[in-house]
Length: 316
Image (cartoon, rainbow, N blue to C red):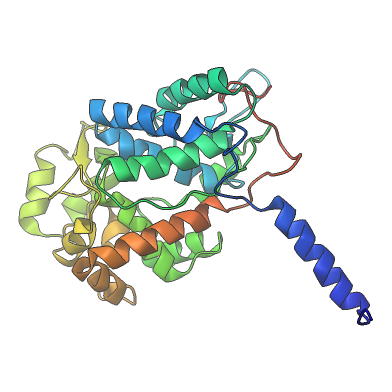
């Protein structure tokens, strides 16, 4: 005999069914486009072999995508006469890069399986493959995102954390996206690879005291107090092209490149987490993978929402 079910239980059950149907899955392309993942991996490996910095650029693209209206590839849309994308937002202008690599991957998967693999999923997989290409640990990327037909310049300006943020600003920017303070520290570890422009750290290296003096001096050589705005310096001075836990060791030695980096180890609540990661690379790798999976789950378009763009730079 069937047990009676209350109206509330029934509604919860229906909600769960709805959630289940919209969830991402790791085998989304297993039958629809079985060679999609290997194609992306091989293109990422080739791009990173050509220029190690590209790995960090592709990882950052996924982050800048997900923090603005969810992981929907809105960051890839070009401006047109009647459409404003996110590329000219403060955190992105003359800084975000890697679009050509995404274009190459997209054209490769389009020739394999036309209209199947989304640009948003390409960003998520390329981020993971970039970390692995630079020596980091892998994680299971969930798939099935679709691409937006909109972008938000204003959200890109308001939602992406800035290099001059204090700890409270960072905590709040990440908390707004559902991340804990621990996950903020974890995801900041992405700065174990990549480079920043002089304008992002000039104030720190000339005016701040919580920086190793020798380190500050070495940075000043390439970042004068006036001029050289786009000159690059690596986030991680010890192993700039290796995805490891050196970022946290550097923070303990007052060698964080950005003001926002050093905020994580500055006699504050996050010091203990930085110390833990500096002592245990395996824990950092595991936590980083889990935080990336969570980030990749930020408001994806699924089912019949959005579209699968043919060209990642424009809507169909």
